[in-house]
Length: 158
Image 1 (cartoon, rainbow, N blue to C red):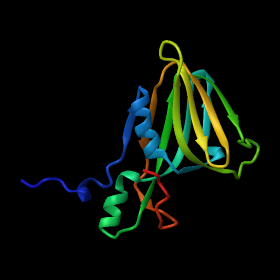
Image 2: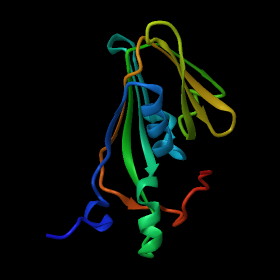
Image 3: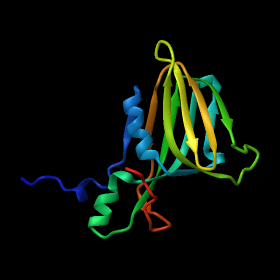
Image 4: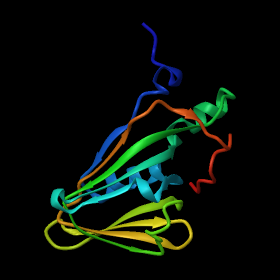
């Protein structure tokens, strides 16, 4: 019996959940530098759900790709926030249907009884603030990985 290699699992899709700030930091790191058209941002007040369809750089595969001298990859992922009470944005031109945004980070400011604010910081001074009753976030890959169009890894401060 042999140990599994990175190659064996490199296309395994992510399906992660976050229910506390530490979990959310893992998702934030994996979603850093993801890009999405403004048209792939959805707020469903009746379901208390906010979602994004992201084109996410596969940070978890970066080192293996570099070692094996193969292309860096992106993957389409759904990032869903549940228990959302309200959504506010700053620096986001909702009327510009051609706008493509880049996600820099996701942070949580705790309030009382598990409630709080989730802040999505975007490149170019934009932000989206979600008021939540509880921290309930899911990041799920929904396509097979594909070669990053730029062929480059984004700059990712360690």
